[in-house]
Amino acid sequence: MMEEEGPRPVARFTRPVMDRWDVDELRAYIAELRTEIARAEAEIGKRQAGRAAADLFFKPPR
Image (cartoon, rainbow, N blue to C red; front, side, top):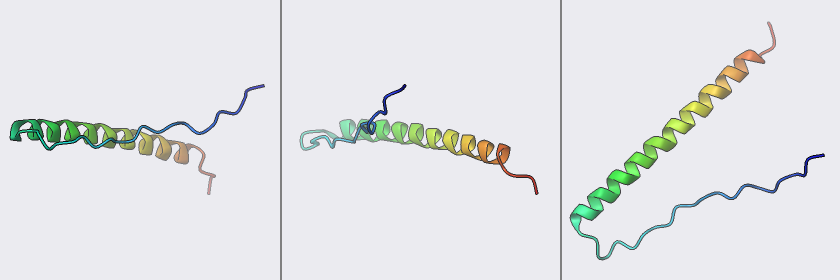
């Protein structure tokens, strides 16, 4: 018998201290964040597509 697993820990965003960053470092940081946002949005799209496919497959006939 499989044991139930507890809730999965979720990695949370930790805000860096930017007080001493110059403009180029801030721009690089923004670019990294945009890349990460795009990655998260792509994952959302994959999950929504998978859910839509499952909904169509398991949809009762009319």
